[in-house]
Image 1 (cartoon, helix red, strand yellow):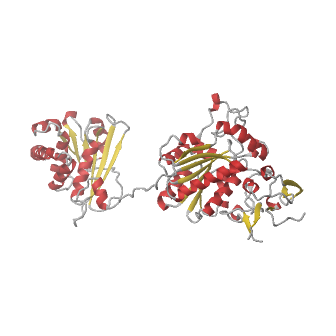
Image 2 (cartoon, helix red, strand yellow):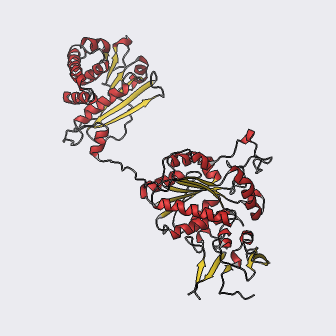
Image 3 (tube, chains in turn purple, yellow):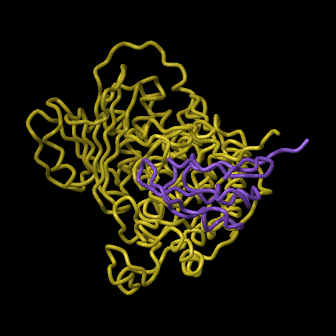
Length: 77
Length: 471
């Protein structure tokens, strides 16, 4: 699914995810899921379903890994 | 369209100190609260522009490798010793100091140092990770393990009748006066994590302003050792653990002013004043080389053994000798054995320990018997005549002094020690001039100058007695 970059969206680095599900539970819009493919380190990485992100960064702050999630928020004007 | 990007800051981008294959990931287990806290502290360090001014103290425990991650100064220290090292760094460098410790490190082996540092109001931001269990070593009971909670060392659940109750660190520290900010937070869900984020930033802001000790207790998930999923562990913290460890601010003295430590003055003038060394020691006149004079004074505690030694040392000091005074005594204030060693020298003194004294002053018989065979050939032993007949080692001159009687005859019944002092002066064993002894007398009675004339008179009286009786 193509992500609409005119709206906030998370960037999840699949390699860095340890599949703890903290972000999935933290997301108020239920737009993260644990994926079905193993990453190189042996974890099923979390994925963004492609829409619904409001840029609240709850997933970012809930995630224990420094390099696994970024939140991108478009700036107007 | 431009984008604002929320990402980790204040941490290294990769972690080469960690080694191994996955150098962009932490060493923490999936779902561990440590990673969440690490990101929050890193972000605060970055946003408050503290990275070049901060020293992170890593503990022993799972966070032992905090220095892999934090892009600031780092020191890793022994188990429970973070407060001691943090105190040293803070006092010596005035950097912002952060100690990051777990429940075993801080609340068990480090409990004493934690409370002492808190009580001194050291400028340290303490982040205390409480997950109720020893993580790194494999899930043993921690000081904060809940009643009934199972760990590998309390497999039937913690029983307070056997292992006591959970330790409440925030509440303990809240009993001390000095700490500035105390709060307990939880890293469980977005709302709690945001509260924690605010507390962490506040603590570091207080450090930036040098206002003193801050203590943030962080309830944090250890899914591995609690044997639950990360999600269930966070639920358990919210529903069960916070009943035992209620969240919230226990103290907020952010209006406090900066802690300014007094500066120690180690100048010669200041030290002379503290130790009453007087002016004599300021300029050492050139003097002829003399052999060391070593004096041992021994007796019961309370007989004035140690003060007689300091008076001899003061006498030497007042005429430019190098001196050492080295006491040795039992734990008793009165009645135990006590002795001191005084060395007078015209060159530097290597060691204050004396094995072969030139002069032994023995205030009682056990001391005399103990030390008399150590005296150098040709040396002198002064002892109180009250001991009666004493056999002297060969080649040693023994002088029995009726100290109390002489003090009374000399008009100063309380001056038995001055009698011994006067006799030491009169014998010349110390190679010190008479003026040195008068200086020392004046010095030791500096706070009661009205007693000086009577004691000087007694010195003269003893000198006359010695002319007749001790030659």
